[in-house]
Length: 115
Image (cartoon, rainbow, N blue to C red; front, side):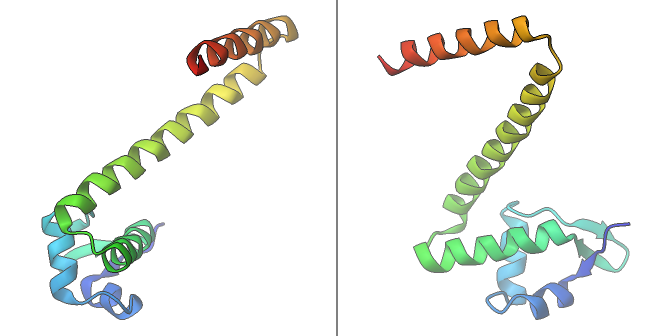
């Protein structure tokens, strides 16, 4: 079972995070905690995301509306990576001749895209 952290836990874990900043990230919907009777609960992935948000905000001085856009792009890239992994696994199960045709087609498409 996944571990969940309270708001107090998360603020204690992340040096650059205070309660007000945490609430602003939640209000901006760049992190979506689980709502429990005790309050918000954050997963380990949420904690990592909050650390990234703090880093982006501090290093690049990004406001929350820009963080929303950046995190959306990161989420899209992660989804595309997962889709690519699944596609690679699916292609790997195909016979050699099918894999060969796919590789040839991909190379041809890549050449067309570069030109």
